[in-house]
Image (spheres, rainbow, N blue to C red):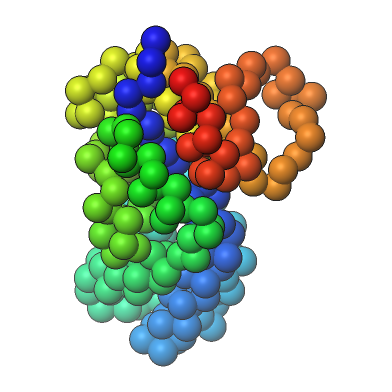
Length: 233
């Protein structure tokens, strides 16, 4: 069946995420050292990260709502160190983190690639992160953008893929999902009935042994390659 819509992942598909998170965590920590010095005296960025990882298992929503996970951790540590109005402080801290989180460096193929794709296909995004496409300047390319923390479940749950297809008015089998994570994106999309494309920007020559059973429908290293392939369908 002909592809009518393309859904895309965000982090490590449209921009490299590791430097973004490092910058956002450093920006948050710098803000905390200025506004909540007692917390910084007791915690480093690494110790806060370890504490956050321990917190994940305490609430099911933290598996898909990364904003709530970070906000809950900040509220806890602010209270522990005597900060007044800890939850409001956490709100302000998360604004600092979110602002830095949206200062991404797009891969060079992204803007022209999305423009080309948008001329032929309905476009959308499905992401487990909480990047703001309006702040980043990409929202105009997409008819729908679903984020796990707002939707209520995360990839590879088929419900979030199906909701995006429904919003675009296409069937799953008419939809191509493009992402860098073989399990969450490629296998997740396939199990939801979508076609899948592995965005392998490294590129690596093959899958690790534990992922070797996953069938790769399509592999590309940038959006230009994707456009060229889809033009031939």
